[in-house]
Length: 545
Image (cartoon, rainbow, N blue to C red; front, side):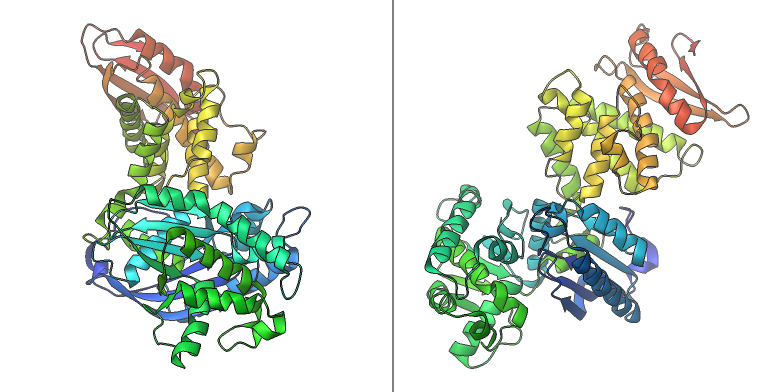
């Protein structure tokens, strides 16, 4: 997995690179192996793998992923690893979506994958899934700066995106998918009229909010082209193309079909039983089980959006994972340039949403990063990846004031944990939330669920050590007026002592409250790093502690 946000430097930019991306979805596990050509920059697809594992077929009573399906998924992932290795992939980037996100044992499943086959999988939110789908579609289709609406119908969720080659204007993820709805609404074969109408009404109701939100981001007179991605829509396109053209276009990318064609197909599908649907040319056995629900989602979405045609794009989430990796590693500089700073902009947007005083939080962030940089290599060995997470937590550490001053550090945890921070995985959001949770009051303890449930011991150590730095950064601006201009750290390895030399903004300010706060908060820092902290205010030259 990618563990650093630093750019790739020097000659490595010139070499073609092989990368694999795996999408662990509700219906299927997909892998794409690509050759990245940094000089362009672009990528070509070398190999595709797919297995219909049906993780969304969860235990109806507990909502848990079923043991036998988890084992099947791990076997598929092991095979994907072997294929990627045979093609000399330097990395496998794996993400999990709706089914794993919602299952009570989803995180345990990801731990099991890592333990059994050594593959680290990132859990991503619905909005982050939508953002990466947008990147994937942009990599395979020219938008010419014109607005496009993208719909991706998965097994567990449906994503709706509005964009025009630049930053996405609207990203939404709705909990309706072909596997989920088939399990919840369909018990008859062929589907009964009552079940069909019930399913249709539910889908329309669930989609209305997302469609309305998307419409709010349209400019007067705009009529965006509709683009569809993923297996359900591709299958519908293949069936319609066979019947209309007598063949399937290769590639399918760019092929269009009408809402009229789709309505006629839905009318036929609802009258067929499973065996009759499976016999349709272009329909796989497993797809035929869920195609009615998937087709209804598309029909209702097109109707609500007022679109009478849809074009196919064969690139989606897994290709978006590749593009996101290229952006993160500095391989794309012009097109989609805005995306490389998506994490930072998302944090600032959340801070504004929760009315954080940005001038103050940015000072705290500067102190936190200064302490991080000055103690790196002596007290800790964390890198750029962890530094960026610390920055995000410093900006958002006080957002809990939006709820209440009392116990605001706990409110900060919940607000961050449940916010849609784009560009971050669920684990990264969890780490940022934990940093903020421990910027004051008690230090991390194993009895705290939010701390204990972090995926690994390394993650817990990161939270313990870097939250201790954040505490001191907050103390350095205790009055929130920028009383301390800068801090200089001097480490004395012989005595295991570190001295903070503080340079006040005003020579006549004794910074008494900042000094008191540092003394009050230093215990967790001293315990974590095994040092004694001394503080010296340069204007008074009076050592404290």
